Image (cartoon, rainbow, N blue to C red; front, side, top):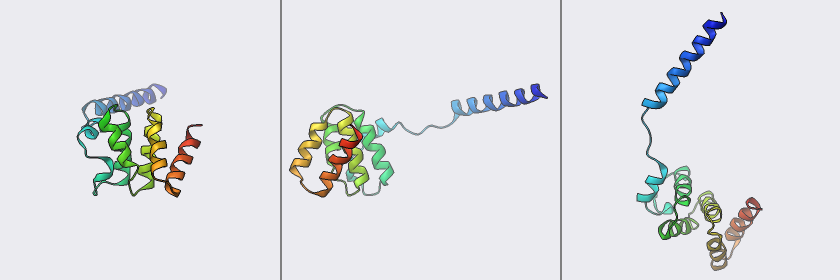
Length: 121
């Protein structure tokens, strides 16, 4: 009985492994982010897709990714803006968030800075 259960588990494991090898794959988010417009500029993207783009951009280092992350701070969705703020700070570009908050005083900027400050204590 025990041998049958173990053989069954082995068969399931092999089936999962084969599926993992031959299953179709989605494009890597970083590659999509390299060719995508600024995260905040696509009106048909969902909030989750925009957040994924923001975090893919955070893995890239350069002027273009910094420009796109900074543009995402102005996204109508506070979730996307918060993701962009977090990505900037986590990737060592926190001075950009500080400069943004100074240039855009108000409740939203204060919430971004306060939330990120709390997250990175």
